[in-house]
Length: 120
Image 1 (cartoon, one colour):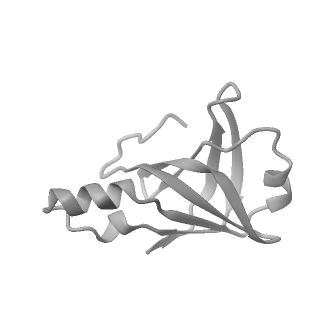
Image 2 (cartoon, rainbow, N blue to C red):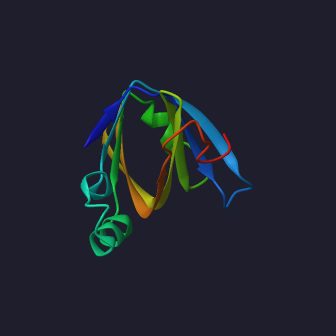
């Protein structure tokens, strides 16, 4: 599990003309088998990459997210000079008035340097 305070998270929709929304997010947690996979074993790494991760955003305005006229396809944020990007499944679980859970579709990118994982 990985947790951080990214401050701003960007939500995207490719299917609606690359719509983008920046939201304040005081806390974000990621539960991802890829973060603990044995990267020296190609089979284990491939299985972990194909599995989805769960991303929980805490302290967000869920009403604003519910009111979006488009589906969220991708989530991105910067943390300590690193850019992280996730392709998302098309379902959101509202875990409370200030918390949502998102699932990835398996495709995600953890940048290792100051490279851009996606254009913000």
